[in-house]
Image (cartoon, rainbow, N blue to C red; front, top):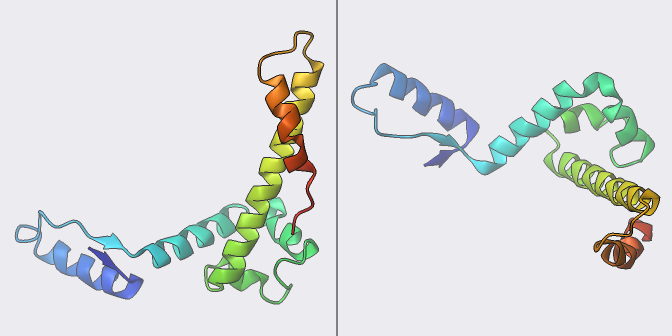
Length: 126
């Protein structure tokens, strides 16, 4: 059963106090609160790696709101930023893969497929 964060904390305390009675029950935090927690963990983990600067420079989240986005409080802003960052990294990965394939002396079976997908990596992000 999924709970929001406050109810999850209360239910966990009750389960700990009465461990024998509730040993077969598995408690889960709700999806929304789990995502907010994950956003907060990512923000703390990559705080000094320039992720906040990237966020501000790309104008995905305003400078005044970036701390809330990385603390898990501004859900929509944080998810929009992480989705954009993911897409950029995937596009860079495709470009790197194509460059690596082009460097190979033997053309592999995937070379025509990579060439046909090249248009995807050249599209501008909307």
